[in-house]
Amino acid sequence: MPTICLIPGDGIGPEVTAAARRVIEAAGVSVNWIELPAGAAAAERFGSPLPAQTLEAIARHRIALKGPTATPIGGGHASVNVQLRKHFDLYAAVRPVRSLRGLVTRYDGVDLVVIRENTEGLYSGIEAEIVPGVMQSLKIASRPACERIARFAFDYARARGRRKVSVFHKANIMKLTDGLFLDCARRMRAAVAPEVEYEELIVDNGFMQLVRDPGRFDVLLMENLYGDLVSDLCAGLVGGLGVVPGANIGRDCAIFEAVHGSAPDIAGKGIANPLAVIMSSVMMLNHIGLTAPAERIKAAYNPAIEEGNPAERTRDIGGTATTAQFVEALIKRIA
Image 1 (cartoon, helix red, strand yellow):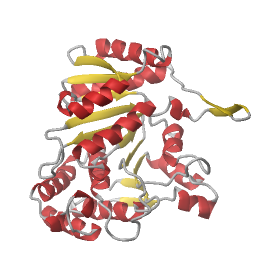
Image 2 (cartoon, rainbow, N blue to C red):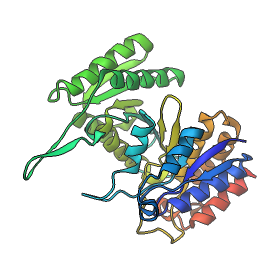
Image 3 (tube, rainbow, N blue to C red):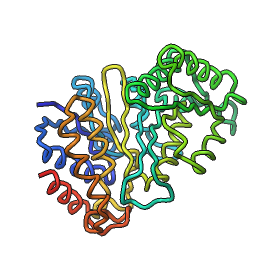
Image 4 (cartoon, helix red, strand yellow):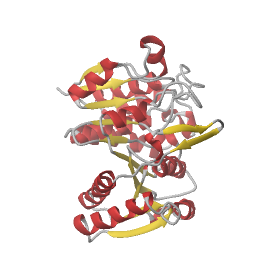
């Protein structure tokens, strides 16, 4: 029986993570869940958005499923996501983005993966007020971090039969930081997967090409900030943040979470879409070797979306189902 840390989070987090738990258990996986506090509610209760007990449990068990956590804008506590990634050195963010049959969007056949360096860049959070009214934020890029994320991306592409890696950058302006990222990508491609097609795009052009023809892309590799922005853009290509999963992977620890936020405006109303967290849990099960139940869950939600029954879809993707009704529909299909 696997032991998995569970962080319900804020807003809709407790609702969507509870939904994922039910679906995992319906797929025949007995889990020893360790529920842990993190986020705004934890900050109020424990005086920290990331209490020591949460860090200690994840350090012990090395695997977690996480709901969204709220981060104050322009002040307040630091992002729980950023703290977790830095604390456990979860250097690779992996966000698969694919079209779901039956979900009508502007694009068909999207099937790409965003791989994002997760610990450096502007998200290092190194900021200071130089003089009154003048703020500075430092962008950090180190060769070891750039090399390991590039190696991860090419290993990922080769292992999964992906045809191409596209690197987004701004090395025409940030010649040292993004220049280093490109140099490491070129070296790792030559060392790890020379057979994989490779291209480099200036990030603003890359964004434009994505909305023109997302089908031309396969694996996208980029530094931290660009990856954060592009993963949300890519979610918009396939139906929104409610249908895109994510993983944060380190050398010996991994935390799985949906890309979306805590959506406090709909918290407690029973209408949140749990699919992104359920899809993230499928990634988690595959990561720990439980591939059969992972496939059972996929075999439930894929046709539920494809058949287009409004009673089996939540409102954000054109249906009428509540969170609970959507979960029940999946469980019936698994059974």
